[in-house]
Amino acid sequence: MSRKPIVAGNWKLNKTIKEAIDLVTQLKRLISGTQNVEVVVCPPYTALGEVSEVLMESGIHTGAQDLFWEEKGAFTGEVSATLIKEAGARFVIVGHSERRQFFQETDETVNKKTRAALAGGLTPIVCVGETLSQREGGKTFAVVGAQVKGAFAGFSADQMGRLVVAYEPVWAIGTGKVATPAQAQEAHGFIRKEVGKMFGDEVSGSLRIQYGGSVKPENIAELMREPDIDGALVGGASLEAAGFADIVKNAGIAALK
Ligand code: 13P
Image (cartoon, rainbow, N blue to C red):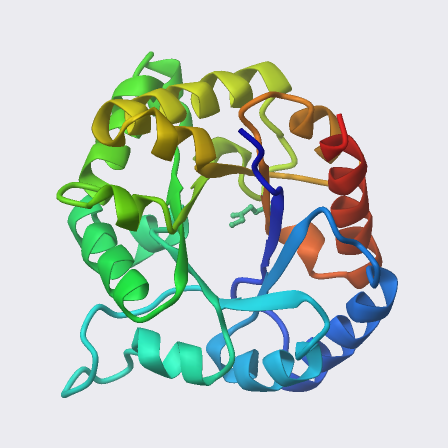
């Protein structure tokens, strides 16, 4: 089953509107002509509209970093799928470990947000991953398995077929300590198997699973060579156009395996 690789940049709380426009203007030039990788950048909400405009018809997509599940109403500070889509985005990250850690997100809120994103016509990138103590305690599969079950509980195969999963081991995020290809593959294979149990082989076989955690131009190719790794969710290395472009290009070359 062929899965088009997807590389997304999660800018987190970085970049003014001007900096964001500069970055994507360069990026557009650097990766023009890249065809076998889907590319997404996820700026802060404030820059989403302008960045989407710069990238219009470039083939590079935009995404938000979070959303709220309600459509509208008295929810101060929140943003809905409709507003994100109106700003020009096609994707939205859901359940990033930083949101789970600092903003009390749970598998239940991840489930509601993912449903809302799909209902609003966005492609959710749903994040799962264990902490260092969970890994060291031998709980990786239990934790990631519970996150997958919780995030997608009650979903139809059609819904599951319209999203992307990102495996981001928390101990690899922003630490420079990338998971080995074997460690990442083991987790990705596990996630695909769990999704297969819930939704069948056809859905799990076409599900794209990104790896995230200290991805750099130097390590993307070896990760991408693993059979169940279908791209990357990149933090720090997506903040600079040349480095992110190299990740996209190297992912594309490795995908021609
Ligand atoms: P780093 O690439 O900075 O480790 O961040 C990964 C991440 O959290 C992407 O969502």
